[in-house]
Image (cartoon, rainbow, N blue to C red; front, side):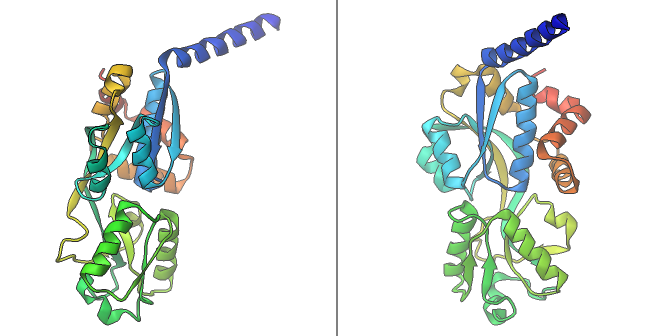
Length: 278
């Protein structure tokens, strides 16, 4: 028994030393479904490489500030070239763009397909049906900043309501259940498009931006301090939009994001080996 205990303690000590020798990687992200899926898969892969990984969910502004100050090493959830452009322009000398996590991303205002209007320009004429309300997400995010700009540009008599991604989808779900009109700040990729029949409202003035991509941003100095980690983040990205959609669907169906991240690593070794430079 003592011998088994000694072996266990030796293995535990060796594992802890391995993590300590490799170092700690700090990843920041915003609590969006696509961000959570990408972040947890990146975390699981880095842990498999022998690193200790700390993930922290923060507001968008805090995410960029942490990267600029060096308090965080990376994020895999930067929306560019439009949504997070203001943050990047302020910190361009302190951070580095290293990979595309997924392209064909999009921001806009989303309504259920049974809503008969097709454009943002039509909202004021139907304000009463929408309770003069646009359901948003976390205050201060790039999505909300663009939404505020759109309200001004289109002269809308609507209130932009702060919330979160979870609150936004809950309000959307309730409205669809009751067949009510609702407009929310939306983005793709997101699991809601697989669950409900939704559509984007046309944005003829282009205020909310067109197609975007989600990118990996790292702090300056990471390439020198942790070259293997830098290589990993430079290679990190989904092989297809379907891979990301699949992990988001798993997270909705059951299991923790951490468990589903390990499931992805097990089922997609070629993708993971590419990230690791193998």
